[in-house]
Length: 289
Image 1: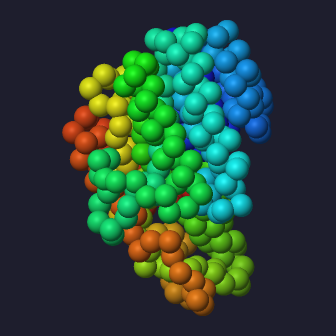
Image 2 (image 1 turned 30 degrees about the vertical axis):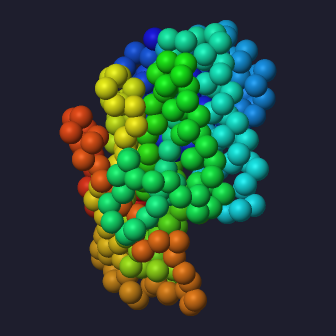
């Protein structure tokens, strides 16, 4: 078996690559960074040539600039939206038996501060969501009209040691490490009461693998459905170094969170046999190490 991972140098690509190799799959990694093959996802000819030559059993589209900032509008459109179309059309033309996985996001749904289901309505609330919504409709079109086995996994917040420091979990971890080594800094946090999921990325890729290896469900939340506040994570992390988080955290004045909670209804993927294995404390310990 052979798989292509677009976004192989990202957090999810890293753990998915490990899982695929463990399962005897030959992996071709594509990324703009790291020691991987460079392919411009916005260039149909480049993507088509790759798919035509490799004829993979699986294609995983994990590439994205994971930010909701408006100034990433065109970058996200090229990578997520155009990239999805280029992959799917190339598969249709040259490798119709290939299974294609497209990343979705909990951010693309209307959020009423209750658990979000796969069947909930979309909302184009930011530039990132616009691209994600477009890519899902493209996946549905190629699945329904052209019979391409196209899967969508909706990701909610998930972390690992490979997270960048622009994500709050890694920002907290790095500050805690420095404070453990006698740094006197104050950690600036926007809203410690914001609730989201803190699933381990190494667990989430197992849900991806489960999803693409069955033919009954084509869209699912790949998530824990368990919410914790940022305060909960702070408490866990600072407890690991025997300190009180409130002595080192400063609340950013005037900060307004995008949401008060972002939690999934994960009952579908759980009914398929997947459950996260890593607790909040275990995740913090992994990231601290």
